[in-house]
Image (tube, rainbow, N blue to C red; front, side):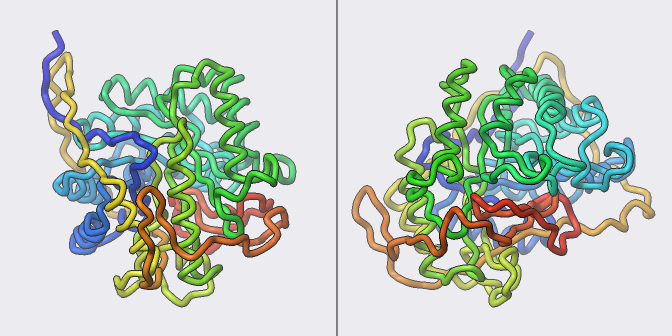
Length: 430
């Protein structure tokens, strides 16, 4: 018999729902975790996307270090926030032979499924949705190179395990970034990658799809003239693939979107984010969006990975923070709704285990932050305006701008760029 045993904070899937994706929060102190969540809620935000890095939780096969993710999940839950957990980053022991930890493709779908199932069991009632890996259509996130069929096997195994442990959880597939085809499959555009996922049997193994529509020089809404190389057109084509495969009723979530103030100035960052929120909310098959990220790693740095926050390193707000605050004021965000969870058997609580000291030498995952200026954004009722966004360069030009993809290295965020590089990351999870 199925008996109720808990309630879950379910995320509102409206296309006006906005959250934050914050990779750095995983490695923060308890005080900084709470302050980050307080800052998000001060902007009216009720949802947060976090890393759940397999490589840092199960560094040694069958030894689990839950303390840090427990601390983070419990803090977000205590704030009554909806949580998206990105199950990414492969431990060294679980990668394909010869591949690096974190970005290396997992050798065994069964091993990944075991981890995903344990996470879903442990956090049932607290984590609302799970993503299966992060940006696997890039070589820096899936080595030796992207493989849609192999990813689909991981997706199927992860979906099955999560649903068995927590039938109410939303499982999000794809987690694809806007890139062009480059080299011998080093990056694969998200449209063809998705089609190859369906060819490999992905239908029925995800509840929603996620997409990271970064482009540092082209505002999201202005991509229509640029064919299938722009993020907004790629998204339309992805939806067409979903419709053709019977998934037209499933939403596409934007679980990361941002603009670094080392690439543009703070008013332009605010304008890009305003443009994105307004245009995203006009797409009927779009779900929630998540801005990347809360706070700069190093305001004033010339590295794009250091300046993606809407707060400066010293916690002072950029103009983009005002854009978010005005968005939530004009598009009220609902607190996550309670959903009754059920289980057929009692599940004993899992205790955190102590890792062998020799396994605790890995560097904790780092995260990206950005800064934003304080300026006035104009409330126009249904539209939020900041300085009008303009394309800062030829959007079809190749760019070397990259942003770390967290647990899986770094990937270009310039939309049509074709370069991928690693930039000083210690973790393969964003």
